[in-house]
Length: 511
Image (cartoon, rainbow, N blue to C red):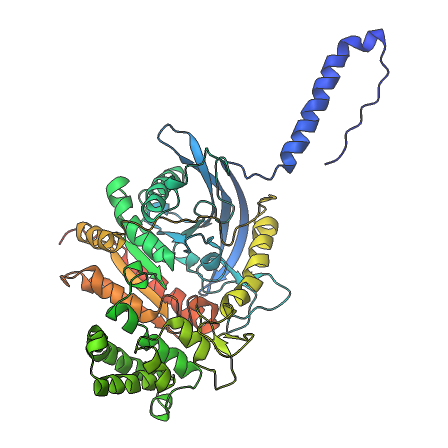
């Protein structure tokens, strides 16, 4: 704060001006204090102009970053969400141009990940495999889908710069924000306001969500449709988390990790020679087939599986996972992912492998144990993302604030009850013939693994009548498959193709 000094002599003739001077002093003082207040404006936007060359096309675009309120039933702001909205300039017919609405996951994660590493016009300064390099910062993204769609990145409450109003205290009703259904409800309402403010009601609309964002966008597909009367053309799930499997034990949840184990072990050259000599995409169908047709039935027998059959199953799990056969038996054929991350390379250098991306290696205090000491991949990513998003928003997009950007925000406890999002997506698709779904997964993701994502896709519609509107894309990387330069291009090309393919282009919405 710059001090303001008033110099005057107190005489009778100045007495009448005294009140004005004191009033002015307090106005200046109050303004300075407010400018230093560590709060984000409830409703504001800042626009900047930029140029990009994407997919071979050079054009200008507008970046609008700001905040928009979450209203309660009495039209009172109870939170404000920070967003960044990119629009390509010189578009003759904005109504015909798709709008892509982007969320990350957590729950509690900011939108930074896909914003600065995947679909946006700027990406991190990282090496070709996704590892951090200094000095930190951002580069142009030549593969962004901004050439074919406008994009808005949304930070849910308490992530990024988004906050409740007030930020803390008894006045904050956490039940309105921090749970599967509460999250979907207020975000659907917020999107209605955003679409209205930006005149995008006529545009084809797509929502993309990563990790927990997969659960979020499954639920939003129906909430937008039935609560806001907003119909979508597409839902894209990136490394989706399906808690119908992840949070439950049982034969399916336990067995379904095996194809991921095969992929990660193949990457580290830890498989038997017969598998290691083949390409990854040649061995995964074999591992998937064994999982579905033999491993799940075997685990369903539990303790009643006879000893000889148990030994055969252990041999196969070891064969497809790279683990020691005795370790598999000691785990009663159900190998936890944490054990795999800790022990896959125990005798091959003693490194641990990453949870979200098993290409990454870590070093623990001791080699023995059931789980790694830390997530080697996440610490690597935070190296790059945290300084980059803070620099980019403040210095390139000119959004100035002392508020901390929450990479991960305080949203817990999170209410996971009544998760009907899988069926919500099915119902939305059934009601809306335009609605298509694409799933993108990295083969080396051990947190929300690719075979779990396939299983989710298979389970959304038990009738099978909607299966032609689903597609799956796999990549030779992890949870954030776009960090690997080769997959950044391929994955964006897949999103671009999905958007262009699913635009109605005058076709009637009917069966």
